[in-house]
Length: 157
Image (cartoon, rainbow, N blue to C red; front, side, top):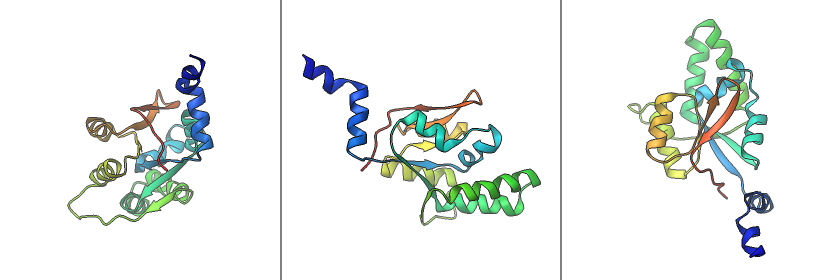
């Protein structure tokens, strides 16, 4: 009985994950990199509190290109945010993905998340709905003050 309780204890399971050194990879949408400027939330610290495990943030190359385009051609406020978001993206892993010109960045995120089974951090309502429809975990901002997730998040090796 005691062994069963220990094996199924969620706190004990988190400790096992930490011992196994498994890292959760999270795909970032471009608007996730705007969160620190919009809502004054430190995404790295808040993700650490929310997940309570090691994580690695991943920015896909089309998302980086989208941010670069906004930094060049957006409104003055968006240009400033996009250039700061690009600096934040330097702290993340960048995955080069060949993009089809007909595909939107959201479609590329959906394909990558489904293929690699990575959760996605986004505030885009439409993208969140599409990801939930295919059972991909989603991290988002709740009440403009904290992060929350939908779905079951499991770390990858």
